[in-house]
Length: 145
Image (cartoon, rainbow, N blue to C red; front, top):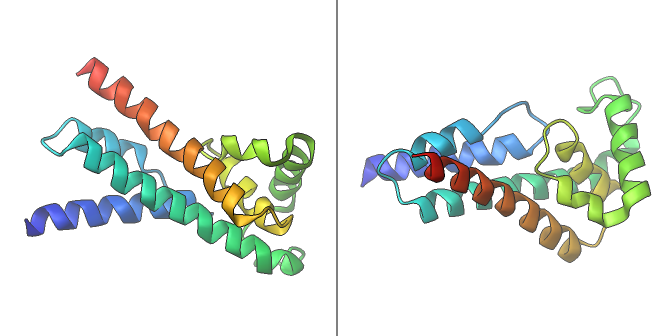
């Protein structure tokens, strides 16, 4: 029981951190747990909630931190942020369906905050993207097992 709590807590943290601007990945852990004796629905739920909440942190950062974008310590390179803003301006809120994608996904969630995307729509689109990614990962993993 305590071990399971630690495993799921670690999964939550890995998925949460992977969705922020910090460099991290959660897919290997999800695959490992799916191939073990852990309940697939619980693995997917914990990873999805952690990953979506990490993106929510990015949205809030975008709401308040944009004024610091020219500072040396700003967590996103100007070129990366400009590319994400370009995607977002070109495709609008629907670009949030790429929130799961490596490199561009996390900055897009920050840009959504910078550009004042309404929170409810942000949460809906990012939730669909993040949960969908884990469902595809699970289907591929369990289909091969």
